[in-house]
Length: 88
Image 1 (cartoon, rainbow, N blue to C red):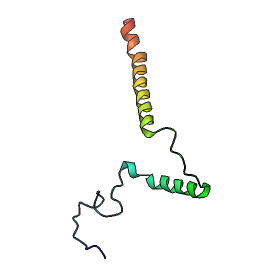
Image 2 (cartoon, one colour):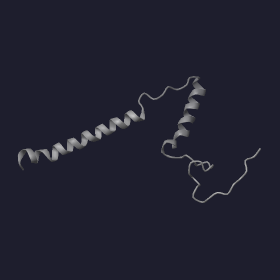
Image 3 (cartoon, rainbow, N blue to C red):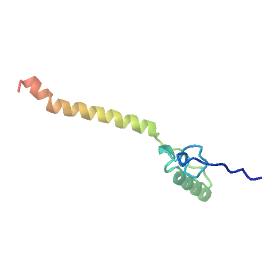
Image 4 (cartoon, one colour):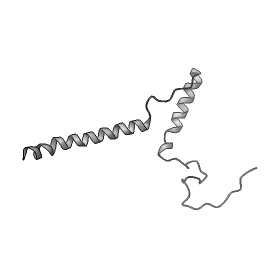
């Protein structure tokens, strides 16, 4: 049984729920197909499901954020603090 077609508005294409192939292709979806394909190939050839990565993306984001804050603090200490502390 086929689904009845309906009229579409020009502004709904490419949006979530629009019913086309590009729906939901936001940031988290980009690259997911390749990762799923590679996992499938590895599982088929080895017979073992690949383990999850040792570190999560959230942990990497937190680490890089902390490194960025430390970098800003270091730049401030090297440029602003000597002038303030030495009176120059």
